[in-house]
Image 1 (cartoon, rainbow, N blue to C red):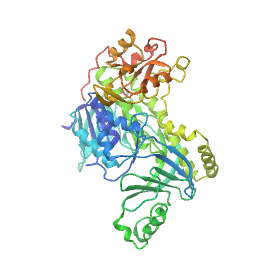
Image 2: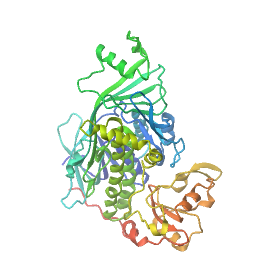
Image 3: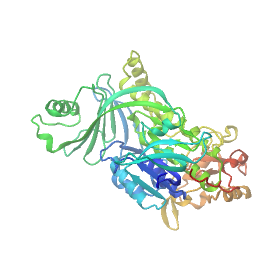
Image 4: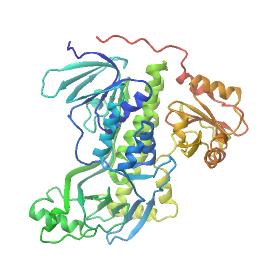
Length: 534
């Protein structure tokens, strides 16, 4: 057995944004983790470029939101244009979203990754082994711990081993973790080859300041301004079309001509720099299972979406936010593994929903390439012109979680109900300081109430280690009180990921369904003793 063999609470395979965020979230809950990353450093070229306000809230929870704001640029939303660049419809995004941040933020992924890596260095609970490639994941037949992870260090053929109480597979579309749990892809019927071109230029670029999608069956395209002098174009090109070399430069000039005027003599080289061009196959896929026992899939290992609504990376960070508090409660406070089963049950339908929205936008752009393409493009384009449809699509990027063990819905009592939705995050005054709500609530459960707390409310809060906050004590302009009133609730129990677990319906006095969820969260027993590594 290698000297490296040791038992760790959590091993994370992959130190991209999802893996590092998961490690930082676990650290906030007191759970140490080890990340294995095959590359020596972050990937230096841009990939993901969009984060929504919910993602900014997650970054807030790990303490990097202010640094992120300094390198991100709020954007006003998305427009669908016809081939003549006339607006078909617009999906507006507010500079002040539900979560307390701009609803759309453009950024450079290497800058985000550097912020996350810097935060990782400040957390003693987190350890990163760069140049260490995981090669296999093996768990006992009954799905229990410990899970064995085999890896090789850069330049070595010798396999070394780690044992973990849980393994998070944040290892991308080619995930070995997905293979290890026997998961296979479900095809959601979208596959197209696109060229992504990232550019830095000081030239004037004529466009709306948000993202633009050109809806054209023969030459669909996407444009977005990423930063002060950074832009991205995406074109559906034939596999043999190149945009480098003399002929390729002429072709590139032709493609970007609607946005920026480039001289034909080649003098644009100094002020129109192509940072990267890469051919991608945009796919819509969903893993049929997201975990087996203590091995979990997150991010691209679990789901692949076309990029048309900018939710690829966002979905992965939501995975981490949903899973980590549950895993921490199992490892540190003795909750049963049944709590972990809610991860896939809650996240998979949401991921499927976002993929379907992205595919619908893709169909509006291209209609696909089969016999039904023109019909689908017409139907989707017409639907987008119906009043209220675009607002619904924009709002439903984060729909309420479906009812389940940790989402207690009682429609007859609560009408539209709040269970499964995420609590808004207004600015509040605390001790004379203006702070965001989550900075008041902390990292655990919380009870928000508009009425004096009952003995039962206080008992629930005490059992969960949750603060009880009366919304009348928060100088928030009435945001939370109005939110509770719309949901016909006197109080709500918030999970650590700010999802409403349960409500006190107006006039009911107490949480009425604690027996349904309390067994999953109980802390009456001590955590199971860890078995030693074999």
